[in-house]
Image (cartoon, rainbow, N blue to C red; front, side):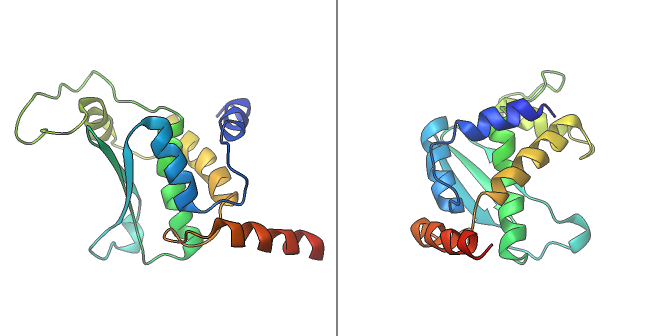
Amino acid sequence: MDEGRVHDILDSIPLTPPWTVRELIEWLSDRVGKTIVLDPWRRHVPAASRCGALWVLDDQMIIKFDSNRSARGQRQEIMHEVGHVLLDHRGSSAYEVSESLLTEGLDPAWVREIMLRSSFDTDAEAAAEWLGTHLAGLSRGRPDDVDGAAHRAASLFELMRR
C-alpha cells in the first residue's frame, strides 16, 4: 500500500478528528452521491467468519457489520468497507454479469468484485484494511453515535493528561 496515497485520502477528508462513524458516513455519502446505510447483520455471525460487507446498489451503498463486536471492532469493520470506497476499488470485467431479476438494482462492477473474491489476502483487501485502520483510529464512539463534538472535547482532555 502506498503510504502517500493513504495520507492524500486522509488529508482530503474535511472533518475534524475524532469524528463519529455517522459524521464520516454523511460526508462520504455526499462525496459519492449515494445514501450509505449502516446495517448490522441480523443473524449471529460465527467468530471465525466475521467480516463486513459492502453492497453497492444504483442509489445507495449498504455496509454490513457485526454488532456483537466491541465499538472499536465495529468501527474497524465499517471503516474497512469505507476504505474500499475511498480507494475506488472496482470489479473486474472477467466475470460477466448479465441483466436479470437477480441483479436488478445492483452495480455490475461491484457484483464482479464480490464474485471474484476467493480470498481476503489480496492487495485490495490489504489496502482497505490499512486505510480502514487509519480511519478507525481517527474516529470515536459506537456506529450509531451522533455526538462528534463531545468526542472531540473529550479528546482534548486526553491530550492534556498525556
